[in-house]
Image (cartoon, rainbow, N blue to C red):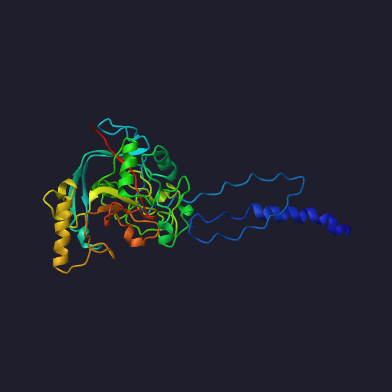
Length: 340
């Protein structure tokens, strides 16, 4: 027993020396390799000071699969502020609108559209913001029965103060934007904010939708701005998913074939009615999924909603409904001219 007590400190020192002189991690092993099993820690005898801990090597950052959203400078090249009143500047210039394949025929053909600079709300209008317009008796409250009609009720699930306002008509959306000194965005403005100059398929890039990027295939909306991985090229949130967004434009199925398509605008209500009549005369189906060919002048919605499928979130997708409809999957954001 006495012999064992004399030899124990010596044995501990030998084991410590062996551990301290063991070779470190192989530098040729990349960050994706399985880490080695941790070495057993041997306590130091009281007479030997412990060596300082080694700083673990950090693996190099992995390249992002999608283009990053760059923080915009405080002013643009023309001296305009890039952010103002909760809005982000979309610079003047051309972009490619529409597509040459995929989607629906009303998204064809792709064509270059040139827009002046404009501001677009960074976030969708929330229930809390919209309530001020209701209190001022300028806007009617959201329709409380539509959530139940669509099997996603009760309505209170959609009324959190930071959730996007929904179940409001095109007229109500327009009234709110006027109430805050703004306007509804044009269809082309929503698409440019989502695609940028590089022509992205989705606001974040060309990768397919994921729960980190957008709210879709769900039964309820989320608070606005809670999916930053899905921001658009200029920094706007929720341009895909959460709620469909009302646009100013009349829905014209032949908009991209018109002589003024390069200006990003379609036909009038009368032009749209004639286009719908032509589709019915040729026994063609409507261009937007299960929606029937309109029998009245309808308005455009963009961006996809919380209950929509992933492919429908593409930035070129166009849907339409009568302006009076108050749907739980539809909301809006506002725009403003950058000059004038």
